[in-house]
Image (cartoon, rainbow, N blue to C red; front, side, top):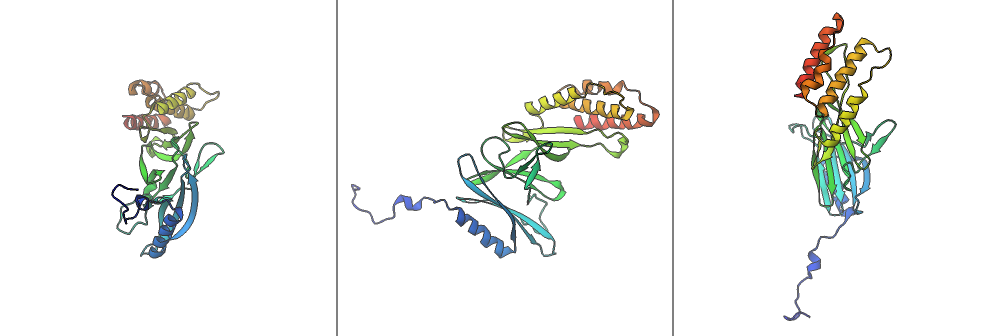
Length: 273
């Protein structure tokens, strides 16, 4: 009994937010119906603590009749993420949920999934211009993770307890018929996916070493592609740029490849600065 006597007021517990996933989903459904969206797909996932999330991809049409996309994420505590649909005048933003990602030879990863190894699930979205966005889900909100990649996004690379992002850069038509594959990794470090992490540099070092041996009966274009890739990985591993490009300076290719090699070297140097 309170020393001030009985109080005719609600207990403090009445003001505590009560988790209700169905209420959150109902809010999404009400909004979707009001703006002409329908659910295209839905996925449920739990974080390490057992908190459930429902991730929904929605589609509709804008006033010009074009297909639009939106993403919604519900937790027991509310709608923690709402992206799209974009209006005709909106700047391009990633609003289309990615359901699967290539995770290596013969493997794919169903999303949402824990990409960073911290126990929170992540979702991946794309948009106009191949824009890529990754959000980490938490019970009361979602955080967009900064993403740094080199070139076009290719998929994931397993690091055991987490995943890295694979990307690949290409050179211009001036380097034809040379077409080296300039792969990179972005690993999660200090709240962002970065190509400058220790793990990424170690991967580049292994890729550099893998290209050190000359295969039997190697053609001249194949040799130059291998050396271009070796120089790329040597520099991305943290080696001095001039040292990384030095093996290319020693090459004396036939006339039909000389111009392509010079263009490739110039583009490589520009990308690696």
